[in-house]
Image (tube, rainbow, N blue to C red; front, side, top):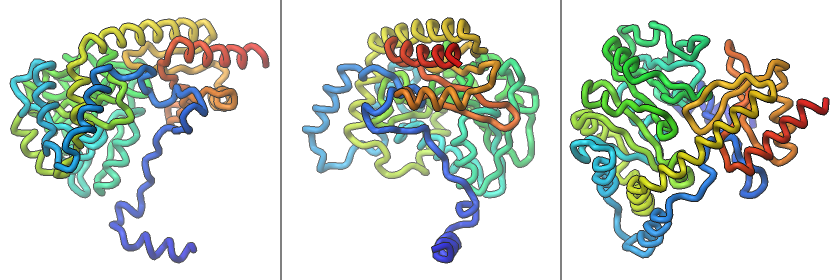
Length: 360
């Protein structure tokens, strides 16, 4: 069995044979656990999305969809105030967009840069490409040192999750602009959680062709199960990256749903207000329980307790029906990342943590 495995691995590129696969957050069966571990929106998507899915499902599914998801691109350009759809590239989740960006800009042996800690998929994408990933540690206040924006000969791409995960913190747009000016490579601002934040970097895309912004409909629009994301960049950049994408990477149903979602501004505003209020309640109560909680501009909170028993807390919550995320970063320590759920879900989780802390 071991010999067969060795033979099989020898058939693949060395970069693939050596790498470790990306590990997503736990995905239990529906109803098995209350999920507060993968930053999903706890509410149903906009009603217009369900209507659009039903209409698309009864349409001509025997025909290929728009190869560029054109209905979505048109709608998104209008909603975001962009000059036209040529500023948008649609993808099967923003993860596919990130894959295209790494494939498009970073060759084998070349390097990409990312902050640490941040989204670990970035490292996996570099490994697949046979590229080198370079991590720059966040400062204690979650700012980035000058090293992040220092130019380097082999550097082909810099990735900046903003808001960041697991911290939920944001680098101000004016600081991002300075980073982009210092770097000689493209700077990708991953705005997966931006709808929960106080600012964004879309305006920087107009000012600098090397600033690219990725977004997803998984979080704020409650469409994690659908898989739809997009890139905002100047048209000449979009045109080159479009050469890399699969022929029909966004199916007809996903495109119809995403188009309806991006137009559901009133629903988004109401849902955002509800989740931000719950986030503040979570923050206050966790602080009251003795946690050190990082102020967040995302739909989750990163927290640590002085006694350091984070893994035990995670295991206790899971054993009692609540799934949160235990994360351990070499050089930075461990902690808990807890998604903002419904009030009932959040209260149930915090009750468990309080009981664990007070009953020992």
